[in-house]
Image 1: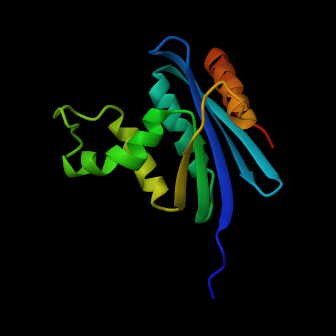
Image 2 (image 1 turned 60 degrees about the vertical axis):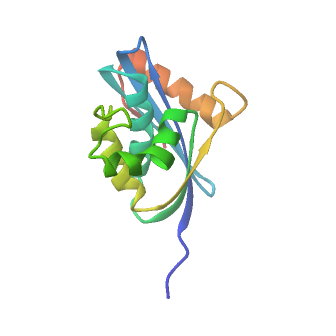
Image 3 (image 1 turned 135 degrees about the vertical axis):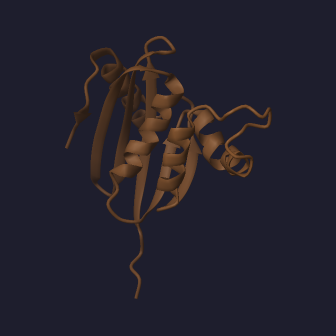
Length: 153
């Protein structure tokens, strides 16, 4: 008899001081009453790489197959993983304009991680009324400014 999958929500955000520049990512994982905040930094990167990293790091933190809702304020990440990636893979990782897909390394990693879970994607407006997204923004900006990785209980 199979057990129902754990339901987890991962809220993500990325930040960059300049683009490119020092970057930070953050995610909040929620499962029932359990909450885990994570963040990290990269000295020279882009905002899109930090947005992708936030989702990747959240998924990497999951130890078993889960039903996951990923909440992002990045239309790039949501569009890429839900609409464009299958075409990129079919076209040998080239865009419709026949140019190499930017951030292919992270897209491939995200694609592999998403395949391990039942994943849905939700877009939220950034810097608005989503309190977890606002908290992720704070954590990602802190990480970008201070170049630190932070894990909270």
